[in-house]
Length: 219
Image (cartoon, rainbow, N blue to C red):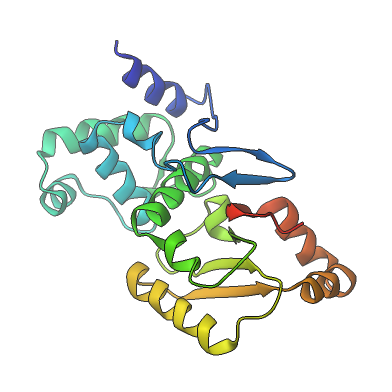
């Protein structure tokens, strides 16, 4: 049994969930993504074909998956698609033919592929058009509960607000690339202090529940 296969099967069998050193590491209370490294490096441990199947399934969690239709869409053999889906099914990834979003291991894989998508689509580079101390994602994209209709929620930490026009332009560019709505939260020092005092629940959800994509964490 290859090391690659063992790693995938170990993850699917709920033996391990880990954060590979080549794309993330603890930083305070957030997960920190080093923009100089490859956030998708762990995903390349899958065979390319299996990676595409899993990524499609996780990106369309409410879609009923049918082997032949998926094989045709991805231009892969039905046998290969069927084998991969059987592995997922045996490990409780599906419920009534759709992705079981109550499975925490589904969420773990979705977070990995969410980060991979942001990297491959150059979203981090686009966010850097706003001069910032740091930026990250929060909400469903950071915890793996996002589905086909979920907005991408982004926070950007700045010393001074860059202006609504610039924020709107970046938001629009990201929306066009991802094909979904994007909500950008600008965090000036004053906004952070105000959230801490007036909306501590949301403030601490950013502190403990978001992932820093580059630069500084929220605090």
